[in-house]
Image (cartoon, rainbow over all chains, first blue to last red; front, top):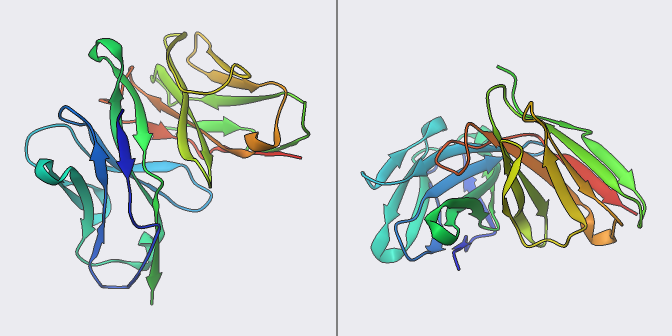
Length: 117
Length: 114
């Protein structure tokens, strides 16, 4: 069964520092991968997604992620964090159901990001 | 263009009651998915509706049900509420079935069961 692991529950970085949030997935075929962000009291917003092609994906708000098949990883990065980036970040993989049709998103447990001034 | 709206935003119920949550998708979107978010279990998929048909269902008991109307608005119902049903219920809409189209999430309905 497909699964997503986000090893870090909580990360604190200083404003202006670089950021990397880790995501590992378990999936047999080429996965559909996503990163979402959730601010307090808000729904989820898509940051970026990977379906195929270039393994380095650019997203909104200056985020990028790199798909590494050999490591089953899809880590999210940002070169310089802003205080407004403080939120919870979720990695997700698209599930396939019987017959290969697209199912639902399977989410990791999330990583909460705090930003120090 | 208006985003996904969910009503009500907050609900307090007691055990044994039932509850109905509503989700209005972005105009033109025909797929609505529902997720339950709790601190312990995280985000878990409930079900997806596309063109008034349930396309996928997560691993939840039959107390959880949903439907979609011809205007793509969706409702989910939880009967015989249990304390463990306390959660943030999120709905997401997309143009069509599956995750190839971006899913846009609403702000959620916070359900508290006492």
